[in-house]
Length: 360
Ligand SMILES: Nc1nc2c(ncn2[C@@H]2O[C@H](COP(=O)(O)OP(=O)(O)OP(=O)(O)O)[C@@H](O)[C@H]2O)c(=O)[nH]1
Ligand SMILES: [Mg+2]
Image (cartoon, rainbow, N blue to C red; front, side):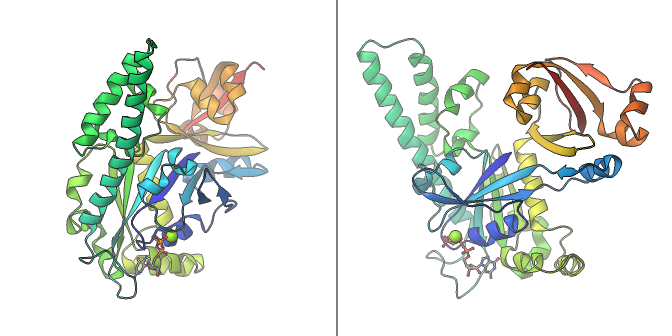
């Protein structure tokens, strides 16, 4: 499951957006994570392909992929979040940037300025990671003096690169890292290493110009960096619209010049940002969508379902969504040689319908 954490300066619309995203959540559960409390909500990912597979199989259960969002009360600024597990473990950060004007909502000194605010939060992410990096480097120095060796040099090397970037004001996500180095850093769960989705919270009047939101708010510079994307929303009005029935909601969205609800736009942007794809499992009992990183091998995809399936992976029986819905049944696909038996090295493709064979 994709996990994302909402960050941003106070009163930027984080909780409004959280409600918009998780209103239709599968469970809407909240929970405690780490020392600080975070609200966790989930949202189902819309996927027309799952609808068509469900129509084909008429299963007892239809299970869409889900995304979990975390929101904390009060200041959701990076330094207060380094101890919050839901943020450390997030795959991506959703940074809500205020671009709306409202006299009754206090904002930072100097008025509404999305680019300034975005940079302020970015700087905090960088500072938070710099503290962690320096602490660890000092520790490594001490351990080395006591005679520890081995992998410490390698770790110190990659951390030194991080420190250099961070001191320079660059986030860790901007570094191009070798696979091994990236793996070394993974355990630190650096906040500035996470892909960033800027959610630009616009005035109702400006949402019609959403395509130009990045330029209008002066955020082009940040968007030119690696692993950063943006999506414009109008959180308050979109939340109101989301509470209407489907037909009215569609009409009001169209009035604003929006083709689809905020949830879908944000989830899609997050999937693009992370390079996520979906594969499916089908059957009479359940049709289900699963999310994995693009480039995942078949055993990793099996692991998304269950670790036992990954461990005991034997083969994957694969047919494409297009073939399956085109022919109308697995048997027909088999007769046309469209069901492939794939091994451990197979790179799963978006839309694959998979049946894993595994030993228990
Ligand atoms: N006009 C307008 N007001 C908004 C919009 N989004 C949020 N607000 C208002 O801004 C205020 C703060 O919104 P919240 O969603 O609570 O913001 P937050 O970032 O969670 O705030 P904190 O958790 O206190 O930091 C509320 O009064 C919202 O109704 C928007 O798009 N337009
Ligand atoms: Mg809030």
